Figure 1 (cartoon, rainbow, N blue to C red):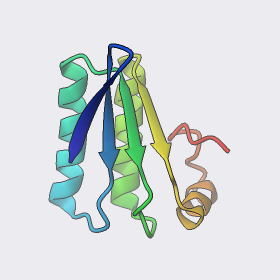
Figure 2: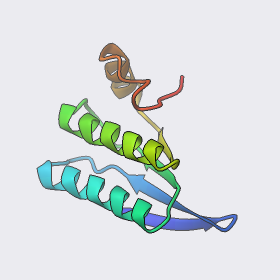
Figure 3: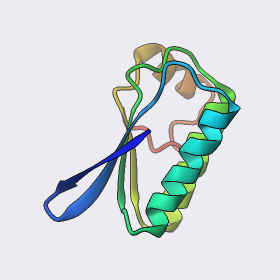
Length: 102
């Protein structure tokens, strides 16, 4: 699920969300982010390009990951968020909690 790339002597975790996700996938996603933080990673990029519809449980996990990264002074960024998903996040007023920029 997670792959790492070294850029400028910093480890960056790139996470590509799956098209299909269940409870196990969501638990594993959060656990891997937390484990990577514990190992010293401070930059996370979540590619949301294949995310097709709002899933409240996945949103909850992403908010938890954003918070735990913020608490650890790590960067957590969502990229390639489809318009429909972005609109749903805005409608739920969660863009600030996900640090989702315009």
